[in-house]
Amino acid sequence: MSVHSRGVKPTLSADDDALTRAPVAPKHLSAQAKAEWRRIMPQLIARSIITRADLAGVEHYCTCAGIVRQIEEERAAAGGAIDVRLFGVLNRAAQTARQLAAEYGLTPTSRARIGNAKPADDNDDNPLDA
Image (tube, rainbow, N blue to C red):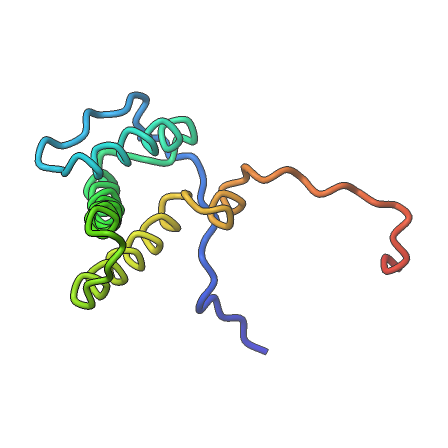
């Protein structure tokens, strides 16, 4: 029987070269993307999983999250009307942001892989344990 790891993500762990301080958000980011940078960076630093080499990916995540927020703000300002062209952009940006968020431990599932999830209770009365 062969064992494959296709579709199985490796466990995230602390990196020896992890940043200890959050860098300032890049100047070229939009206001919404900078806000996302400031929101997530303390979490990434605290988990010791982000290195200088990862900053471009984090920047891309923040850019995509910023695009989603900007389009939503513009839609709300226009009375909630949905522009079909902008919806496609929003949809792709949201999908990319979600994928990048999972890479950096910004989703519940990816945080569990890092080890931040609470350990399960050891239930000695479990009838399924044989």
